[in-house]
View 1 (cartoon, rainbow, N blue to C red):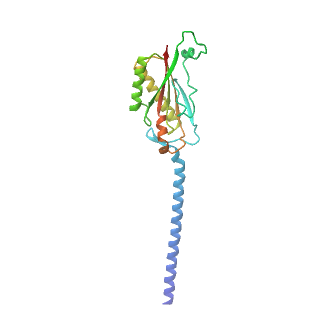
View 2 (view 1 turned 60 degrees about the vertical axis):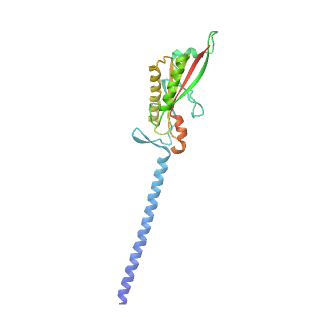
View 3 (view 1 turned 90 degrees about the vertical axis):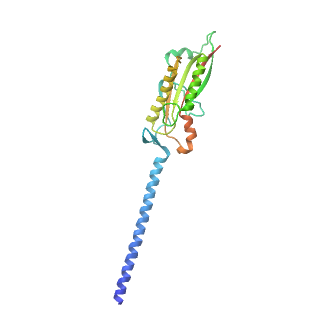
Length: 223
């Protein structure tokens, strides 16, 4: 009897030891799994966006600003842009506008800016953006416009190449739309695709909405 009791006690101890070992292993695996998830989240959370039907990640080492000049464009307000639009190119036919000499019969030029907004990932304006385009055409039909400058911009979500293409498409759409509505004035255009947003998307949504636009700056000839 005593021998049987010792055998049972030994079995109980073995079972307890196995249970304790299993619990320790499960706990370790759980911590390892959690740390793995945390590391994945730390890599992807700050800069992931759903673009072109795929999730696109903007790496930390990509540039803050990626200018791309076109054959038509305008500048963004300094309150929105990280870099002022000082790189917009102009056509050779615009050279007289840059002359430091002012002829006696030259007219003063007042400028007015129109902001055409777009939804996330879209190359065509949203409803408010279309209203702004219509408002600009009404102005152009009543006043003498000497030069139109356009600048396309994107938000900070997505890859550099994607945002460059998107900013370009936005400017091209506005340029074509203006010409199709009888705006024959010289148009200068540029686009800027942004990358590497600094904060989580849900905290920057209002700022990002302001960047999804094409800015129209019109120089009005005044007597």
